[in-house]
Length: 99
Image 1 (cartoon, rainbow, N blue to C red):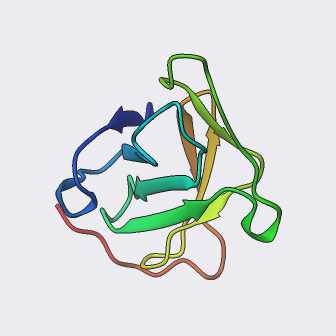
Image 2: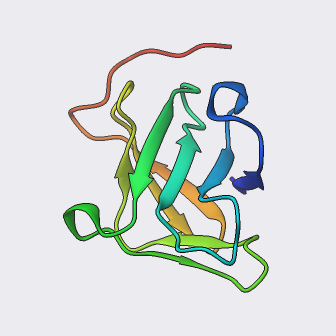
């Protein structure tokens, strides 16, 4: 699934949306708000936290995480490479889904 960078507020994100923190691209990248494609819960990915390195393309349309991000609600692993997300379900994943 292609993740969509957006400038919406974190409470308005939809499944598959990413929001850069800080929004000003001239400033230091702190992290991203990531709306889980599986359950729709927003999880924060902080650059440098627990070894996570976030890289972006020049225009910010393609984001890559050095390791998967675990959704705080459903616990699915979100692998993000060049703006494409793949989901990995392991034994920790909760059986919740919203339509």
